[in-house]
Length: 282
Image (cartoon, rainbow, N blue to C red; front, side, top):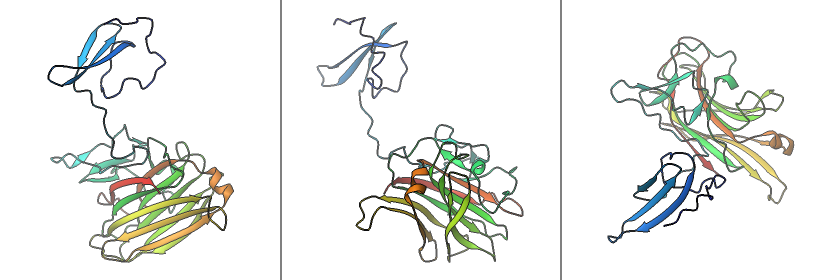
């Protein structure tokens, strides 16, 4: 075999696929072949050596990482763990405990009656579809402490600037159990645009919260920008909270997603947490 040393493939990003390995310097040549037993191999020539690797399989992805997905696995012995730094940003306020994303024990109560940009855990990648949704499985503790869990979609940057949409579950024993939907404008003004009361089992209060954004430019009545929060509480009926945006508000939105957990007053609960998060296009 002849390797063209002048063709070092420096500008051919993504040319080598299916190899979770870093070679020495740039890759100078690739050659795939099948041996007499019908087994495929790939020969990789870099600046220092020739490596033969098998199998040469391009991984098949069953879920896009453009949308958050995490089951918040914890160590089965200690029941605690760290948030994955590859997938998440702004992790300092959070830890994993008993299979949930919860607050670290040193967290102070929320400054306002909602989770703010500095409180939010952000997914590392932008969503690829302009219409998409993110869903969490939430679980509160049966305590007279106002507990919060949020879903963020259509955000910008680090969520400290620009607009985004936020759906927030709020619960306290003997008090409130509801979903609130907010629009954070590009000016950073926060407006509650929808709300709904939730009824369900409180032993413990748990269920699913989905925040969905539909951007329909082909509707017969004209372009529609629909925000919809759907809550499926365990032991209760599904409730919806929805609102419409206009074209200018839509233009300010981005593609960043996230979630968050907090408490408004009283002692912090380590049982107040997000059990699962997932998302995808609408």
